[in-house]
Length: 97
Image (cartoon, rainbow, N blue to C red; front, side, top):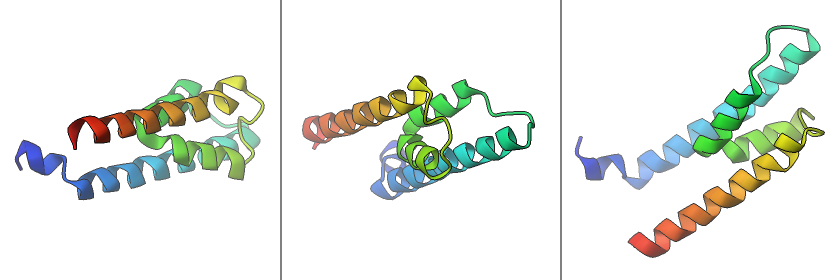
């Protein structure tokens, strides 16, 4: 697999689908574990998932599961990450296409 094949649009779309599914599920799992008083997913891990492209899934999970909605780090941080990612994608599209 060559370097150009790695950046094929299909792989990029597949990556974003998977990482956003992971972000959504991580929020749901963490909410479940919080309710059952079990070991939790660290906040740093949830933020990292958002930073590597899973911010849409994490935001949807946050809203669906009503989880971490009162924490500023998440209620403001996740949308900020999403806006930054969208700006980066737009910049790359303009710069490289």
